[in-house]
Image (tube, rainbow, N blue to C red; front, side):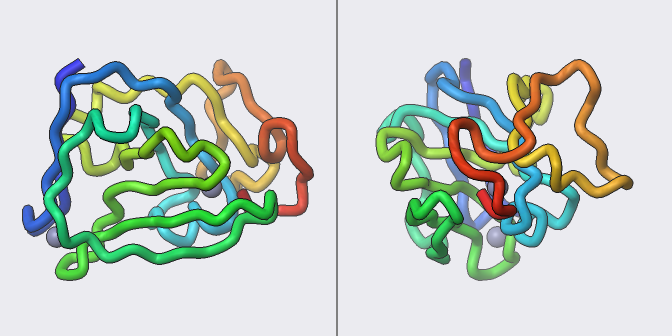
Length: 141
Ligand SMILES: [Zn+2]
Ligand SMILES: [Zn+2]
């Protein structure tokens, strides 16, 4: 698919022509805090398939899985752009929230569903893991 998007102020843009390998919503605490909603929506693409304007600010943290995780956002307007996890180093996860056409995103899976707040429930039709797939369930993904 042809994918494009970018932040609110348009300083950071991305584009590519690739098929997403992984489409997921995550309700972990860290994703909730950085998303501005109850969950983050992410599309994983092969690293290198997406061209991104340089200059996004990166914030690193450690998930309870032990994997280092980097979330990138626009330093001017704060929009979340992408993330990377050491657990899947060949993928870059674009935030579906900053797609030009949000209809391109088709969630396949919800993770950390046990953390979903009552005001942002996991859709009933979506396969869901209570925690991280094949990991512990201590609260942050
Ligand atoms: Zn911006
Ligand atoms: Zn998460």
